[in-house]
Image 1 (tube, rainbow, N blue to C red):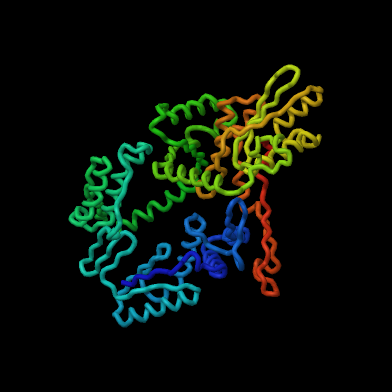
Image 2: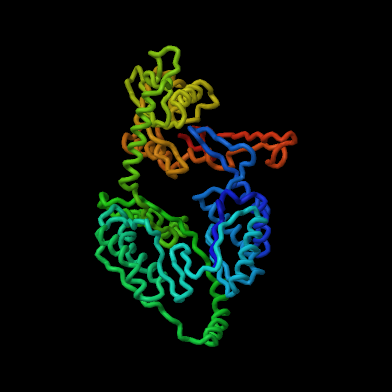
Length: 505
């Protein structure tokens, strides 16, 4: 056997190698020019630090690790590389950057194949570490032994097995299926029952330690006793029926609802949700065909675990202490007593409340809003909407202020902070700032906010979308004629601007 590992596979994939891989794939599937452009453009990596974009010098083409696009690109390039190994007459496979090949050649011929493989990868700008003429190989989570013809599960020597506790705050389906999933994987990776029992010992101990009483058992693998001729006849007989079924079958467009699961909630969220669907989208409703139990599925998502909660708490405390120790200005008002937030107008990422009090009638109206920028930036936007007639419909607050001005009523506005929350992050994939705003709108019931704001989408994700970035390069994103790095201009979307549908926040 031959094992090889591609060194730094993801960052070593160049734009030229990706284009060759896409050209190779176009021989088997239709790939449009737009799809190629999207694939290439998705590799234009832009990093954000403290809310500001940063681009590395030179070419910013980069295949990122940990993303779906990076994994798909890795698989595509891997298939292209495997196509170059076909003429070596070996059985070879590649998973991400780990490869395994089998050959019945002599040791000397295998060494020659090894050198040819190194040359092929080198020609594509990749380096590999490779070992040939091996009889026992650890590949991924399986150990293959050519001496005995058996295979068994593989676990790193210093790897500690950790599973969720049976009483943990996870959906019941996850806890119930955990031992079954482990049992199935160990069975598939074991040649016989004896190997399974030896490999299952540490897994049984880890499950027992976490409250799971089920003992892992070896499941006999089903063997097909039919002959090859019988299989061929069955395949030919079923081909026609499969073709007719696939042509008539129509795929449903499924919409998933993923509420967070918590044992502290006694209500059956799933049942109540589907009861709402039945009551709101009755059979005579025009959207009944789109929103039914057949087109809407429910799957619970997990809440943060204790480690994540403690980590986020510590980060918040450290950030607050560092902000206090730093000399960052909290207010830039010339007249400090007139500061709308009592000397803290430069605070960021907060939920604020505006209280409009009419002088004559003592009527009070409230409005809740959010801003990821400094409060002073958002405050100036509000003041602009109060002054300029063409901005009177910018927010529900500005509409109310203009209504009071048109009726010549005296009023005053006071401002306050309700809560500070983190805006959308590509790491957490959630926006606590928007969630906090919706929560306080439901709890405090402000008189000026509109109900549809609760259903509005997060506006802080837009600055991370590629369509909202603008790159200007002189020679197809390469170096200019003088050899200097081409400039990159990033056009960020303001976080408080109305979205494409004109929704107000």
